[in-house]
Structures are given as C-alpha cells and as structure tokens.
Amino acid sequence: MNVWTDWLATLDQNHKIDTLVLVNADGPGALEPMLATRAARIVLINANPTQQDALQRAATRDARLSLTPIAVAATDGSAPFHAQSLTGLSGLCPPQDLRDLFPGLRETARSDVPTLPLEQVLRQIDLPEHGCHVLCLDLPADSVPIARQIADLPSDLAPEHVFLRTALPGLYEGGTAVEPVLEALEAQGYSLDGSLTEDPDFPEYWLRRDPLRLRCAQLESEAQELRRALETAHADAKEVGMVLAESQSRLASKDSRIEELVNERTASDARSRAHEGRIRSLETQIAEASTAAEAEKEVLRQKVTGLEKILETAQEEARSKAEEIEKAQDTLRKESAAIHTRAQQDTALAIRLQTLAREDLQDLRRRYQELLADKTAQDELLRSVTARLQQAAEYLQQLDPAVPLPGAGSDQTTLLQPSEGASPPDYGPMPPLHKVATKFKRTSKARGRKKARK
Image (cartoon, rainbow, N blue to C red; front, side, top):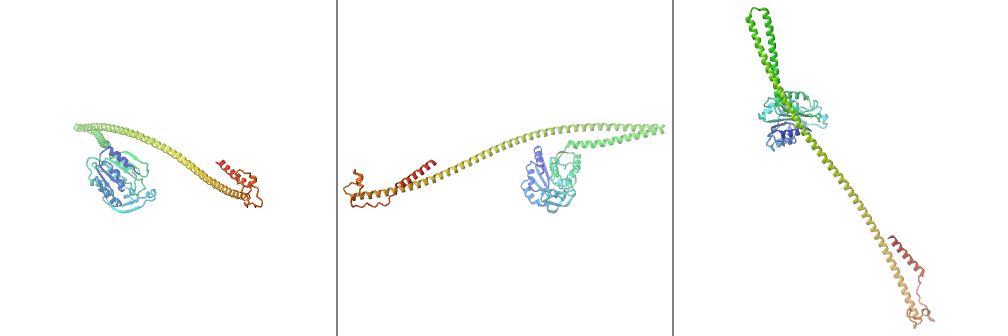
C-alpha cells in the first residue's frame, strides 16, 4: 500500500496547489485523497477501460475533477492496455514476475487505448504558466518510462513536485531501473526530498524542482563553456607565441609583422584575463548559491527534527493512553469475574436453601401424616373403649337396677359383681394393655427422633 497520500496532505498544508495531475489505472476509490486537498484543479489521466464509467460518474460529483482517458506513452497512437484484477497494477506493460508476487492476479480485459507523450498531454490539459503543479505517477507498470519524459519537458511545463511509484525490474515486461531516471531528473534541477522502500517491490520517490539547484546547474554549464573558451584562448595564445617565435627567428627584418603579432598576443591575453575574471565571478556566484542552498537545507532539517519530536510525543501519549485503557479493561475483567463468582455462589446457596426447604416440607408432610395416623388410631381406640364401657354399665344395671352406675359414689367392687342368674355382656376381644402401651411408646420415640433431627 503506497503512502503518497500522506506526502500529498503535507504538501497541501504547506503550499497552495494549482493543478494536481494524477496518472493511474485505479478506480474511483483512489480519488478520495486528491478530493480532500485544496487543489484548484484535479486532472485524472486514466486509460483503464474497465473503470471509465465509474470515473465519469465521480467526475460529475466534483467540479474540480476532470478525466482524460489517454495512456501516457513515448509516441502518439494507440497501444494495448492490460487491465488486471488488481486495478492499480494495470498498464500498458504486461506483467511478467508480478504473477509470482500475486498468485491470484489475472488479466480481466485487454483493449487498444489512445496514447500521447507526456508533453502533449500536459499541453492538452492547458497547464497555467505560473502556479504550483503536482504530478503523481501512481502507475507501477509505466511510471519509469513516463518519468523519463519529465527530464525532456520545457521549463513552462515542468511540474514543481513529482511523486513516483515504480516497480522493480522484472515484475513487468521491459521494466527498467529507476536510478538513471532519477539522475536525469536531478540534472534538470529536481532534488529527491524523500523515498519509501518499505515495500521493496514498489519503491516510492518524492522529487521537488529546486530553482537554486537548477540555477547552479546552469551556472556550472556556463562555467564549463567559459573554461573551454579559456582553454581555446590559451591554446590560441600558445600557438601565436610559437608563430611569433618562429617569425622572429625567421623574419627578424619584418618588425611590422612582429608588432602585429605582439598586438594579437596582447589582445589574446586581455581576452584571457577577461575570461578569467568572468570565471572568478561565476565561481563566486556558485559559492554563494551553494551557501544559500546549504542554509535552506539546514532550516529544512531543523523543521524535520521538530516534526519528528512532535511525532514521538504524540506516539508516547498514544502508548500511555493505550496502557491506561488496557489496565481499565483488566480491572473490568477482574470485577466481572468476581461478580460472576459471587453470582455462582449466591445461586448455589439459593439452590441449597431451596433443597433444604423442600426436604423440610417433605419432612413436615411426613410428620403430619404420622400424627394424623396416630390421631386416627387413638380415636378408634377411644371409641372402642367408650363402647365397651357403655356395655359394661348396661350389664351392671341389668344385674341390679338399684345399684347406681359407676361414678355415683357406690362401692365399685359391688357393682362389678354379677347378679345371680344374669349372664355377663359380650364385650368382644379386648386388646391387651401391653400392646396399647407399646404402640404409644413407638409413637413417642418417633416424635423424639424428629425433634432431634430438627
């Protein structure tokens, strides 16, 4: 993933961009960083036939944006365009080793598109003579051949800033190294402001047209011409001296000719001195320009150092905030685990209490049934005893009507004696008293065990 968008945002903050020219093969998604700038004009050079409809729709949404469906090439004409499944890797050059780098890459379309040299394209979009113009070559397949044409542009079309995203030789057929192109651009007054090689297969470069560097190159060229003229003058003077010496040795009598030759030599010496003065002046200007350039570079280095410190501070603050957030998350996780543990304990306690309550309820029901059974047995026994006592009273009354019933104060032993000739009543089988006592003992023991369990 290229980062030229960060470079473009920084450039937009420091300069007012007049015309932003983007040469790529990608879809509308790549336009968002450009549309976010303050550029007065945005010119998109994109010949990918699979993206034309989407790009035309994007151009209608922003008045600054215009689309030129032309491929930049060395000649005017047409050439086959190779559209890839990764649209940003499309271009005029077909892939070679690129498929080894992206195994799923495939060609989605191939069609002839119109081509124009870079100079004609820039004249066609009518670049203003003055202003800050930016040329972004985000087209790895064709960036190096296009960048080679920048060095041949006239001064009125040369952009002030150039972004270059290239591909290593071998990824595309006919691919060449970018270093000779960078050297040619530096010879035309461009200085390399930065480069990014974190992705070694697609290195990126930022270049700026430096007026001082361009002026130094021009002065150096003029100085070389003057040096050549001085050497020629020295050679001429040497030749004249040789001719003069030869003439003096051979034509001693011809003083007029000698004087003429002396005058020619004097003139040559004067010209040589004039050239030497011009050379010293040019060397002084070159030294001053170099000093100014070094001062400007020092200021830029100081600015970069300040920005790096600001970036380090921001990164440190971000790390501190991240650590605080992580600590807060750990605290929340621990509290959540404690709450979950307490909830499990409370749930287990509630289940245990519910189980105990259910057992107590079952025990109460069982005790109630036992008490109810005891009460029923006692009621039956009481009814049986009452009936038998009633029969006994009736029998006693039959024996002796004058004898009062038991409980009326008479001698009970007398009442229990049967009268002569009377037959005792049939009370039925009387339960043994020891069995009744045993039953009451068992009931009392069961009640005692229940109380002990409680």
